[in-house]
Image 1 (tube, one colour):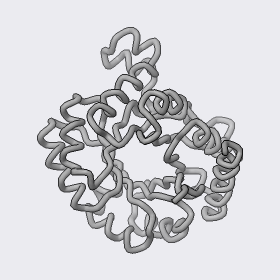
Image 2: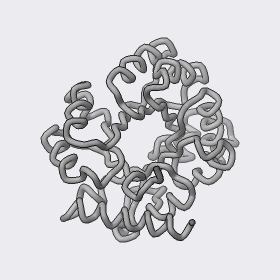
Image 3: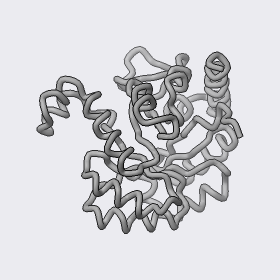
Image 4: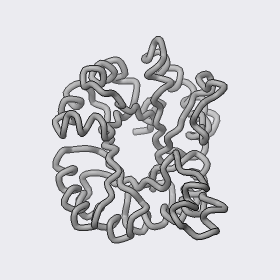
Length: 244
């Protein structure tokens, strides 16, 4: 079945209360492809939150825990994640190739493993502070591509990266290797002093090859979140029609 505009959209449930999260699931049900559960909500509610969202929506579940530990521990944790029924889960690509491989083994083909290449608030200065090679400090994109190679070779389903790297990642690792893009801002929602430095519009991200785009504030803060989601869907579908 061909993807529709809504299938590209991931809405992050970044709320301090489960009631607010559930309210947004109800509002956006049928208008987004996935709901993303991050650390805050998962720690507050535990694994049961996955089932609660499943009861409210048929959308996919993206568990954004960014696992990073010794390989054996991550493998065991992944077995529990797979049993919970999450569709996707994140791990840090900044660990070893072995950890990524063990994460995939633990998931057992039931849950797609996404490797986070570089956190969105990390820039060249942060890369330098972590002691990386000069070539990576001068061009963090090279570090992102290096980590994407590790993830691909380990059997991960894909990576989380900015829109800037999507095109090259797709060219190097193929269309089946997922590229999930955060920092998405519809053209009609970008404020003058946006704190996101690596912003991409939905149309740009999809045109570059992003498989999933994470859109939070533009939907969450809209007077009509469902209406805002429909505007994003139209923007994506316009981009798809132009590309076909």
